[in-house]
Structures are given as structure tokens and as C-alpha cells.
Image (tube, rainbow, N blue to C red; front, side, top):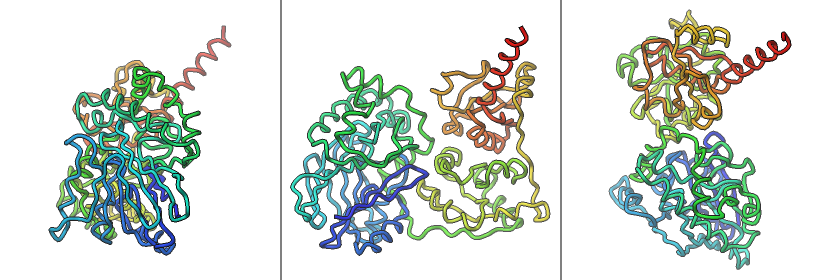
Length: 486
């Protein structure tokens, strides 16, 4: 049996390529939308992808299952469990008008890819239709499972969050019943031996849980002993209280991913190939789309952005948080112009199409941002702690804390309002305009992203340099000095 985890570091998402080396057939489970990567890995190992499967309808990326069915004729294996609201609706929408080869799966169903046996286990809670694939290498002579692709049910050190149908998809009243479903799904873990490996859908950094481990795989025995969420499953009440507490605000784009993965992700085909732009071409695009429908996405580091950037540009450095920030701060229908080094353009494009941004209409080479190239380059405003304290005491600013609610509850500036930066675009009507905004986060990174959005939308936003870390350090220093003085 061939097993390969193909991992997206930025979304902390794992797709699992499982192949039978005797027949050369392979399946990819939970693929992202730019499927050429999976086809290349399969071909390099003398395998052909004949099937694609999903553990559930995803919220954090657009699925590549439909793309593979269209491109290579892969048979699609999808859950038919759960309620009527969460059934796949794209299986009869092939580009030529036909129906994709598919099999809808219920608890206990089985299928084979070459000599590899897959059994379906229904594990609702994260979503109603969620399933796990239990894998036995019968072609290799095994009669017991080697592992399970657990999707967003069981992670290393955590469980999939049960609140997203309510907090992200807007299904009111779903959170507590989903948590109870997840509690009862844990009984399925007891059906397997300790040695069965856990091949999860996400790792540390994913927004699909609150405490995912950085180790990529585990075993059921290890998780039974050390997974904190499982330790709190002493009763339904205790488990529900624990699993719902402290879940971070979901990124704004999650609701759109849920919808599109249910209805059918738009077919991608080849990756977009944005052309380089000059000042006059950018000006024409701005006029064509309008300022509100053309997002200028500046992927340079903050240190470069703040010293000079295009008016209205969003500061979204091409780091681990790039897709989460992009999905939260760019409107769903907006066209995009990138500011990026030419060698970074494809990477940025891949990250954008994975969350449904296909209208990337050009890019501006980062080195073109000079006054001599015909661009006006406003700077970003930021203040240190001393200036921030003075402005607050004088009543000159409103304080906007863009950390998670759980962070805010642990301590904040007295006058601050709290909106997580991943939800800010949908809550701008709550943000006052009568004074400048002092934007605050832990260290100054999330607030820089939020400040660029606010500036684009016509606010005057001042970023607190160093964030709450600097604020608390200054308070601590003042207290120490006062103590020494007495």
C-alpha cells in the first residue's frame, strides 16, 4: 500500500493519497481544488487517481473532488448521511451535462481501490454528514485496519469543532445539538484497537479546532490516553461545556466554502495566469471595476507596506495566515490585483483559488512600487504605546481590539471594543467613524491587516506598534519604576 499525506501548510489541511501498488490505482481523500499537485505525486509513484472522496462538506477550502471527476473521470465517494440541508447537489452537473461517476455512502458501507479495503463510519458532530474511512490493506495480506482517515472528527490532540454550522454557516440553534452528536460519536472510537493509526484532516493552525497538535499523525490508543477533548468526555454535559468553550471566531469565508462545496465548487481547469501590470493598466482596471470591487492585495512584508503602498491596498503578507486573512478581508465578488514578486505570484494564486478567488486580473511586480514608476504611495499610520496612552486619555481615538473574543476576555484596554479581524468585514457598521481608530491585537500583526481594511473603507486607522505585548510591558515597567521609587 502507498500512503502519502499532501499537506497545505497555510490552511493546515491534509489530503491523503492512498494507492494499491499491485494495480496502480489510487484514491485521494479530501483534496483541495488545484488538483495538479495530486496527479503529479501519483504519476511520480506510478499510480493513477481513479477515485476521490470527502469526509464531509468542508468549510475551510474548496474541494477538488469535482475537479478530479471532471478532469480524469475519478469516481467520487461522498456521504449521504445527515439531514436534508447537507446533501451534495452537484453530482448531476457535469460540464457536458451528464452525471459524475459516484457512490453515496452510509455507515457500514465498503468499497475497494485495488487491494485496499475502505469501510465507512458515520461520525456526526463536526457536521451532520461527517464520515471516517477505515483502511485495511488486504492486498498486502492484512485482515485488520492499519489506520483511519478521520477528517475533522478526530485530530491529534483535539476534536473537530461542533459550532461551525451555527457560527459560520448561520444555522441558528445548531451548536449544542452538534456538540451532543459529537459526544455520542466518540463511542465509535472504542470499536478499534489501540494500534490503528489516526490520519486527520488538519494540523496545528487550522480553524477547524481549538487545540490541534503539530504532530501530523497519531494512534487511537495514544489519543484515548492523551487527547484533552476525550478526557472531558466523562458526561455529555461536561463534554458539551468543554468543546464549545473558547472556540475562535471562524474566518468570514467559511460560510461561502460550505455553500459552494454543497452546491458544487466552480470548475477551475488551469490556474489563473495574471499578467504583469504598469501604472496605466492598473488605473484602467480601477476604473473598470470601481474601487469597491477591485482588491489590491499587497503580499509584501508589513515593514515594506507601511513605508509606502498603493492607495486602498490590503496588507496581506504571503505568510502562513495569507489565505485566512484573504478570505476574511476580501469580498467574495471582488476581482484581485496582486502586488508580489514575480516568483511569488503562482504561490499566491494557488492560495487564493483554494478559497474561491479566481478573478485575479493582474499583478504588479513589487519592485515597481517607486515614485518613479508613476505611483503615489501613502504610508500606514502607527503609534507607540506612549502616544496611544496620550490619545486615549485625551479622548482622541476609539480603541478597536481585533483579537479573538477569548483573548479579549483575558485582558484588554479599558475603552476597547472587540471585533475579531476575521469577522471585521461583516461588522463594519459597528465601527464608529467620528474619530480615528487605534487598532490593537497581540503583537501588531492582525491589527496591521485590519488597519489596511479600515483604511480602504475610509477610516483613519492607527496601528498600535507591538500590540498588547508592548502595552503590558509598558504597564509592567511603570509599576516596577513606581515600586522602586517608593
